[in-house]
Image (tube, rainbow, N blue to C red; front, side):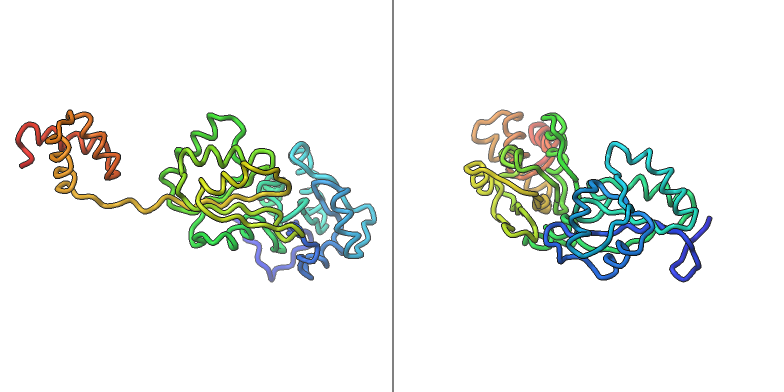
Length: 290
């Protein structure tokens, strides 16, 4: 196994460079130096990246090459060859950090697998920016990228989120955010959520509240811009002992409910497993739980 360290002499390298997600001033001095000196710069859209270069007075000199979701695989070989030949190759996306819901991860994997150096000039990332201003827990979180377009895919994801204790961050389009929030209301109406729009841009906005309330806000207006949704994780499960479950079952069955209905009511109310509640109910009916 070859381990490449920062102090070793390595002639070629791939540098993953973060670029602004909105405000063009949000770029590091090192990132600007790399964009200026790199032998080649691979980007999603050369027209978009020319704007960044122009804003900072960086000459292009034919160094911009297109790399997007449709040609990333085919570009891997060229980039590996360039790095192996001693070139410094920079990888950028249209905004933020490459590889985070943007092209780039396959290129990084290919260069790394070739035993060549991959490093980074870190900086803006929409997922981190939105999380830090959401007002929700930041110590543990999960990034979901863009949610699926098919109803079945989204419903499966929502069921997984029902027991996900970490803060959930995902991207959504302005055309779909109202629909997604409406769907989330059916599952997590009272959870806290922050919808972050146009981060670092002129019309930056953060809408915070319960899912139900925020869904109403976005359902009543037209929406534009780049959007990140930050959803609170599932609340910590309550620890309910058997004695509490038994007492609740006794009360419900004494009021005339059938075993089945009593089990459903108690399981849903106390947040315990239906099977466990049913076993206790059977014990009670057999006289074993007293």
